[in-house]
Length: 315
Image (cartoon, rainbow, N blue to C red; front, side, top):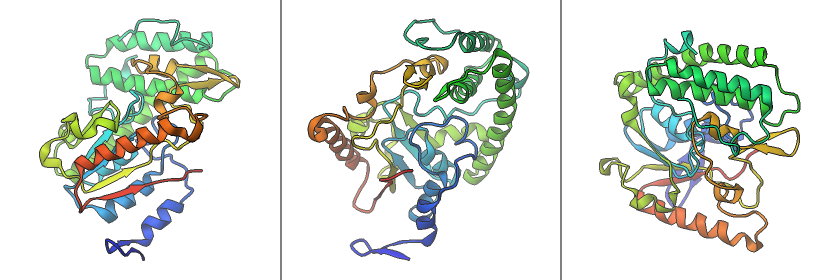
């Protein structure tokens, strides 16, 4: 056991082992879309298990792909997350009847900005699938299809030099729709059982807030009876580290904002917007100012008995 003497907090060996784990992240739903710089679900799971009880609230002020929120809900906790990027919480889709998705394939306005550097064959395939989503009766089903399309696009284009052909893209999409629909249904079933509620009510266990956590204490979208949060579990953008949160890199140094187009979302701004500041700024003043404001604001959501667990390194 590792002990924090000031608070007399005992860190179980399982948490330390999870921190040091180098296992690949390939379990659903974390594998649906590989958000950049995510941390291990095992780490989140063990930290939540060690430092909270069922019914407690877990907050992540930089929730990214939602690893901490997904694990909190799966463990019977309430989850609230903030992130400035509209792509960040793509994994946390609402529950939906997915059986019709498998048998059918919101058009979105085409803008040159979002299609920049997007290879023609990939664009043609994605446009066809997006158009076919109109057949689906539920908005939640259409969002689910876009999530799958986002994962296919990432698989096919991000950091790749050779683009798959139209038939290969279509085949990969069809395979992922069937696989992910089944995996997501199984995950929701298990999470619902853990929370002793129907699958359709699981959305009541989480709040996903698309804004900066610099104003989290004034946001008001986390219910009062959820607070104070028992655990803040997070990993903010690191100072001076180059991470492309809002683009895919194609053919070397070329970048495309196509992920926002596929997700039917809007590109917020440049790299500095998502990384809290420019990585070449002297002393990283903007980064540390914004990070300080974020954690100062989060103080309004916790009390003296709350715990902050922050991951400060990744491979």
